[in-house]
Amino acid sequence: MMKHLPVLLLLTAAVPPQAFAAGCADKPGQVIFEDNFADGTGGWASDSQAAFSNGLKMHFGSQDTSWSYWNKTFDATTGDFCMEAVAPKAAGPNNTAVVGLAFLLSDADNKYVLQWGSDNTLSLWRDAQKHWSEVADYSKSVAAVQPGSPIIFEVNVGQNLITSSFNGTEVGKIRAQIPQSNLQFGIYTQVDKAVSDPGYDFEIKSYRVTAPQ
Image (tube, rainbow, N blue to C red):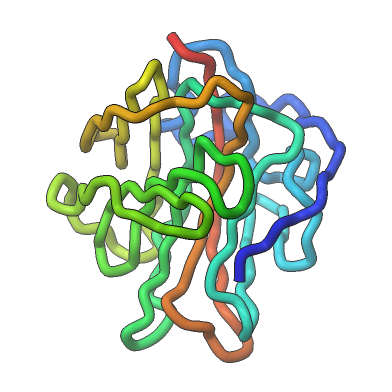
């Protein structure tokens, strides 16, 4: 179930660069936002299923199949968006688990997502008013990833161009109409079907956004 979460009016505390995955920490440009999820002060909404401590754990209960979770106190439409996560294992037999970086997000039902699935698929999707469409399939551009391994998503949004990278490798460019308004960024997680108790956890390690170069 998609979650439209309340605003949490908190500011991000400064975090030393070494606290972030090397893949995100070494990106050039003025930092707009960064968080290693050591605590809940990063501007993410308060939710009983989101736990902050040495990373973010997003817990799916027996009724949950998807979650759009975005930052409430920082905006960024263009720039470089980077997220480190832990590659999820399948949520069960024939039950793919998906984690992705969400951007150009106005609400839970309007966004782009660069996502990786436990079936070793990598793709760029657009969600427009709850209508999902696959923009690009990048699965053949990357090597297989073992569950539990670190994975790094990077999306550069420039003037009418979206450049996607995964684990340090550029996988594709797509021209797109980029809105002029201030949009948000966040995380998208999904399982094909709900998991019985005790549920299922996704883990996010860090997030960093830098200004356009």
